[in-house]
Length: 132
Image (tube, rainbow, N blue to C red; front, side, top):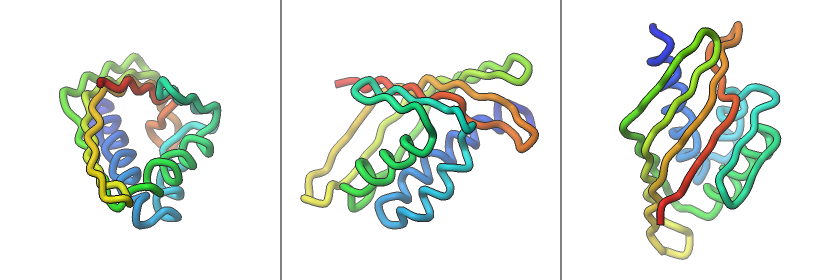
């Protein structure tokens, strides 16, 4: 499998695990933890994380915990690989139903960094810009 496809599949698994967090928080946490480098960071604009555990906790508890369901949809991927480093950029829309019954739509762009390890590609940084 080529590197760009491996990275695209990694990002798709990240989104699927995030979606799973509303009904299986323990499973989602375990899955998300395996996608990151130990020193991975994230910037969602309104909140930043300096560890993958904090990011996974946010996705599972703050986002997934308040939702009955959610589904991430990625589009327009642009993945650039340079040796063992890569960047990935996707448009994203997330549909969810909050536990209070409100349905939400969040749209934005992911701009991420990746690094290849002996175990395969891992996420080094998640960047998210929300469009309102």
